[in-house]
Image 1 (cartoon, helix red, strand yellow):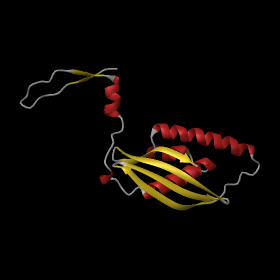
Image 2 (cartoon, one colour):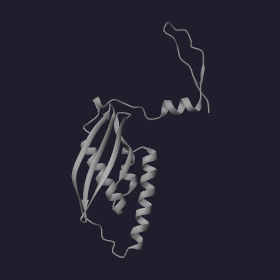
Image 3 (cartoon, rainbow, N blue to C red):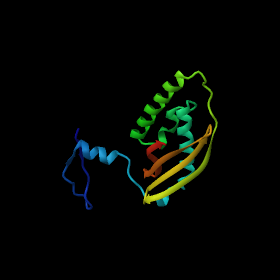
Image 4 (spheres, rainbow, N blue to C red):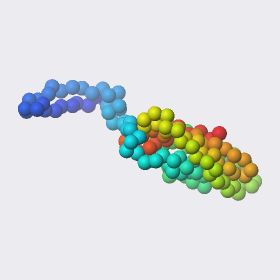
Length: 149
């Protein structure tokens, strides 16, 4: 796919047309990184995403509800994990949903526009950690990696 670009110089002269390759077009239209400076405090997003991920894995929330806060590869990974969890729950006779509580949230600013967080969740006598990497993309925090440990 080629996209034609044209423009005008100051003073009215025309610029010669340049061809944009499909790789250039993908980079141009893809998410654009941004600085942490204009973004909100990520702690509440880390807590909300961790809660949502646990609810998705428990089968009480749909993955689509957090699609705007995660990148496509992260979304696809979460869909696969949710399907695996659904199959495991289907084999169990007891289908009750355990209650859980957020115990702690930690955020580390790894670089400008990058936050790595860990959220400790306590459920059914067991603690788990949800590790989340947030990146500032298009003036929003988006999760680029998620792991439930």
